[in-house]
Length: 413
Image (tube, rainbow, N blue to C red; front, side, top):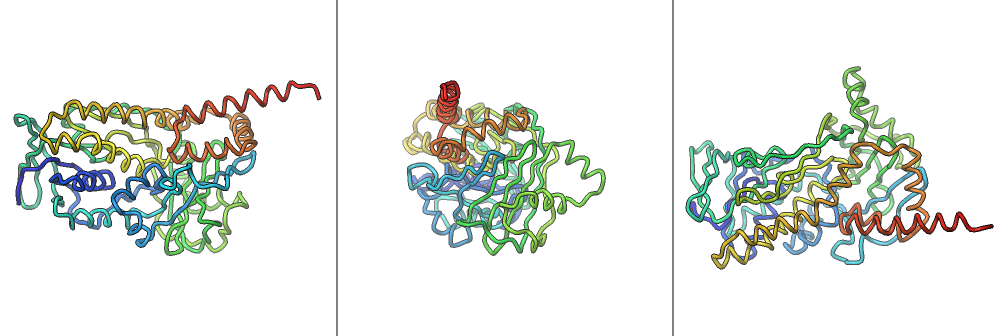
């Protein structure tokens, strides 16, 4: 097996696998280093709602059809609020390529993606390899690894870190993350015995300060996720209260949620008691970072899988030509960093602001009342949460609607 590649990718989860496939389709030789020692491992702490921003990437790679055969459920978000439903009839966006989202469990998704790597002639998937050092070697990079078979050295033109929120590569290079507080804890569990909502909608309950999300899955499984202030979660845990019961009690307050009378817990209750928002530089010291290694946000936002796939595709598109032609990478990496910051950071700012629970229930109701009063605003709100329009576009439409509402209110009756 050769130890010389065009690209070495550290991390074999969603971002790393998508990045490898994107490079390989352009004829580049790629090594993927995955620390876990088997192909069927997967990320457990993930609610795996793949937002529409990622769909064009899966389609380009020819993965959408096989994913649906595997069990990916086409879905769209529908939002319950005190002011009414935000659930416009149309698909996401105006482009069929971003018309829906996917729900698919990581126990299915991660092994599926690694199987795509293992069958590709341009990709070497190296399982059970822990990166111990990343250093320059002339114009190339030298990546040192360790594992059951002993130490190895791998050389490549480019190193890409897709090694998650706690990125070892970032620690080695000094790409320190900026952590910002998140006031909510996350709890979620899998259930059986719950019927899927009409049209396989994913239900998002926007109560304040709590939030509850319901995701229909294949094989008649359902994921229920609950996001509560950290103090509430800590009280539940310290009192020994049943987290399963607390999740079900929350959802039963909302008659619009499918009948839960037959709900049966099909997993343990998972979650995060404290999950700060974390931002790193997308390019640092000549190494590129994708997915959670660059941007790991409040789980409530559900952007992890979508941003991982989209940032991987963005990096590949910015750099594959230079890699193929043997050109310098400084300019292409700068392009990637600029595009990353332009697309993802505005969404990140909104997600971080929401995680601080700054809105009172009254303010939230006023906001949702404005949105529900306009079909256009409903559509743009749903598209914003699918990450296929910018926050600036939605904010401009929302501000215009508020101005019109004030003018109407001041007119004599």
